[in-house]
Length: 233
Image (cartoon, rainbow, N blue to C red; front, side, top):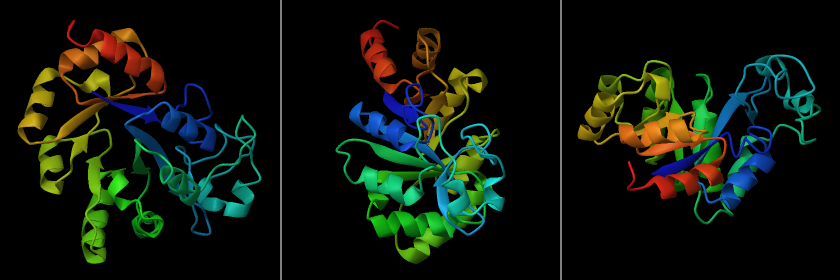
C-alpha cells in the first residue's frame, strides 16, 4: 500500500510548507500531495484554499494578491508560502518520493506543466485535477511531447469519466468508498487512493476495501501501522 503525505507531513508542520514537504521526504512517503494556485501576477504558489486567511497571518484571495504581497504573510512556522518552483527543486533531492500536484482551479495548467518540465522532474510527478483541468492538460502535454501521469480529483469521481480521460488514479473520500467501486476501478487498471486516513480505524477500513494507497497527515505512523496490519485483515 502506497503512503501519500497529505499536503506534506501536515500533521507535524503547516500544510503545503517547505518544512512539511521536507519531513515527508525524510519519512519516505511514496507521494507528497501539494496544492497549487495562481497569484494575481501569474505566479504559482502552494496553498489549498482560495484565501490565505486560514493558513497564514494575512488575509485576502490568492487570485487578487501578487506574489510579493503573498510572500509577506507567514505560515505558523514562520515560513512564507512556497512557490511551486521551490517545491519542485526539493523533489530533485528526494531519492524515493514523488509529487501529486493538485491544480485547484482551471486556467493556469500550462504554467504548471512548464514549471515541471523546466525543473526536469516530469517523470516523478502526477497531476491531479477536475475533469475540466485534465481536459486542458492532456492535449497540452501531448503538444509538448511529455507523458505525465494524471489523476482525477473532485467530489464526483466517476469511473466512466476516469476511464475516458485515461487517468491512473482516483481518490474518493473514505466515507464515499465501497468495495465494489475499488474492484471496478481495478478492472479498469485504475488505482484507488483514499483520504483522510489518520487513525487505525480508518486504516483498517482502507485495507478491507483493498485500496492502493492512503492519504494521511502522518505518513510515518500510518506506514508503520500498515506494515503491522498487513496479513492480519
